[in-house]
Length: 333
Ligand code: NAP
Image (cartoon, rainbow, N blue to C red; front, side, top):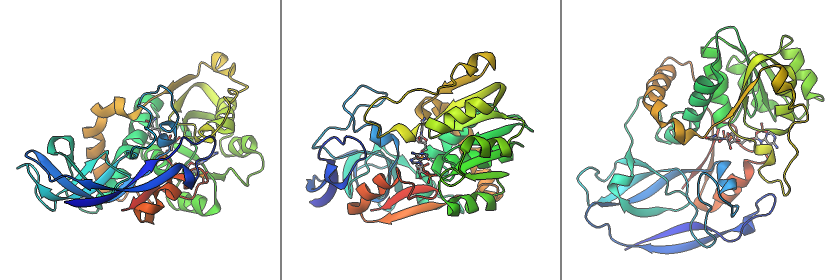
């Protein structure tokens, strides 16, 4: 019998989550039966959307239950198999993060291929859910055309850094914002045209206007709040606002007022559309083909911030809200 440590939601946070909202427990796993496998996790993902699942309210995914282990994307190695489709040593992707090990039906897991130059944990980042979010949101909703100007917030994060680079590949001028000088330097090293540290720039509207004096055609929104207002203000006629996320409001204890200049979307014929990546699964085969090609050609680069130890997962998750990650935030289990 295998013992596994897991992290449970101890109570629902109000405002910014803190370590006391999580608890570590140890559970005993059964032997894998026929059609099942025992998997030991190698990496797990922490993602901003998990904050939404900590509220007890209806949403596109059900809330986490208090007292139950948290869930999320993870990559693990098969240790014991009761199914011919998986053998010990295979790497699999699951939604069974926040725990050291688990037993699950083999047909609920995705066996990961070996890809040259792509480490296994990249399936949680650049070539995984965040990568597809960037690809589908920018291309299917943003519809960028060569020569257009794309503004992306949260640009040094898992999604934003890929959006910025795909927009360059598509021949756009890219204005990117991020919260530290080190993140801005990394974005510049990727060839991003204009990079703004939104924390130190003084006036965000002026800074973006200076970078994009003729305005912006596509805004890829990861943060909401002031960034969204600036994007509406500087949007050109027929601009597309891709509403991917609004992390600046995820810990708000009261509903935040909407952008005060929202009326401009009428006169400028702006299209503003939200999306959830799971509704774009049909784009995944093309995404994987394009992304693996861009990686092989050196046209897409990525960063990871790896926190070691399952017990540090709450800290890693909370760190998303203060920007402690550059690129994809991961926990090595
Ligand atoms: P991430 O960008 O890697 O990490 C979060 C980053 O947000 C932090 O590093 C921080 O960077 C920034 N941030 C935190 N608080 C902020 C604030 N108050 N104002 C401005 N920036 C703030 O996370 P990710 O996984 O790539 O997700 C990015 C966004 O996409 C999130 O809004 C997430 O919910 C959304 N998302 C949506 C979908 C979908 O299907 N729609 C799928 C995946 C992700 P700085 O240091 O730059 O502030």
